[in-house]
Length: 416
RNA sequence: GGAGAGGUGGCUGAGUGGUCGAAAGCACAGGUUUGCUAAACCUGCGUACCUUAAUCGGGUACCGAGGGUUCGAAUCCCUCCCUCUCCGCCA
Image (cartoon, rainbow, N blue to C red; front, side, top):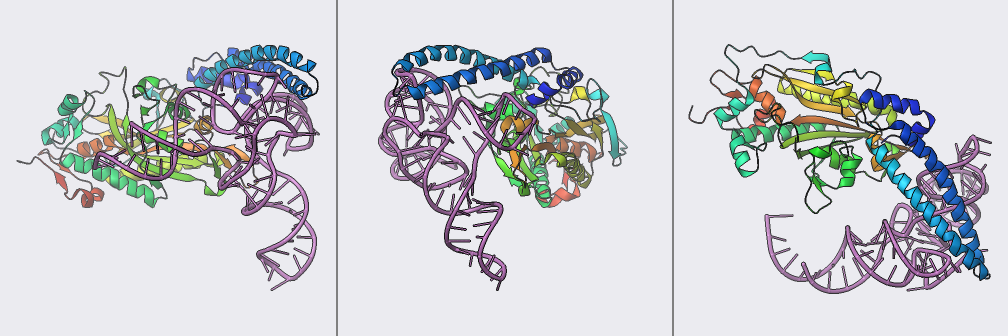
């Protein structure tokens, strides 16, 4: 949500932003509606003031009662108009995208993202490296077939050593974030519409959401929803900022309309798992916090030894709530290219405004906080481990930092 | 799932139809007194929106949410939501 006052003061700025982001909101119509709304508000409030004034006379003056009764009807009619207009404005407002940072590259899709830097040495194989789904099947550690049998295509099992690897990865990442000042949570895995709206998933990604029948509940698409929603309607004390929160959770996405797209393996699935970083901070700190989360993401991949590149995500590849976004694309030798494993978004006050998350500064002023939402690790990182550390015999070496947690340093065929 | 109690400002807690946006206390802010601290005393202190040059002032709305009765509702009526206690079930 953007501040409607920006639309009042500088409609051209909003219009231009919508044009650049390809938002289908009729900004001019919205602006006109808002102007009409302001006039109507004044009319209604004046009428109510008059009604209230007359009401006070009624105690002693019986004849005033008839006048108030008349006025009441007129007020009711105007109030209905006002409320309709308000609803219509709110609907339009809900679809307005966030503003963009100056250094967001223009572009249509992920092809146009701009690589900022590379890290790590791509492994040099003397054999044809396998993809994670081939490895997973061969080692019996990823089971998509039974996932489909039990749930649906798009669900899967991590099995045996694979489940141990994934668990170790998620636990390790959480511990590392705690060391870096994050407070760890386990959150609800369902949230109500208000929470999804507030975090900007609705209305923009409605078709990605699993809703629960007959309930005002949906399965979370990420713990970002529950971690940011945690502070809805709250005023945070200035000295507590920044707040750094982390959580591990399953993430549910319908992936409607994406069949056939990167569908091999467990890259695009209905349920994945993620350790998430969330920061609430003062507006002036959000660029630095965005970088700080980025550093955390890169630190984790470096500790694991996975080669990657960082891209500055272009306009077309960024969701409407985002102000600026970095993705990390890990090197996947079996796939033969870089693939997105994490992303990191500065949402500025877009979510905070929708959810009413504010802070009180030392002088008593209240302002909306800024939020940063950044991945730490996901299943995709486990896939990257598999592809990068595979051996010619089909076994996979476990990264050093995870060995004390997995209890083994190599995953291999049980009968090999 | 069964039975009962309750939702008022940052907190505690008055308030059953009309100067109630709401007593009082706590907390908080400013001031007086004072070697320092503490105490005491005085003053101030909800939120959102509209208006305004203005965080002067004015207006509207808000006492869980939404409807209704009435000239007038925190107070009466209806529906819903939530919280708590006891019982049952249960990881």
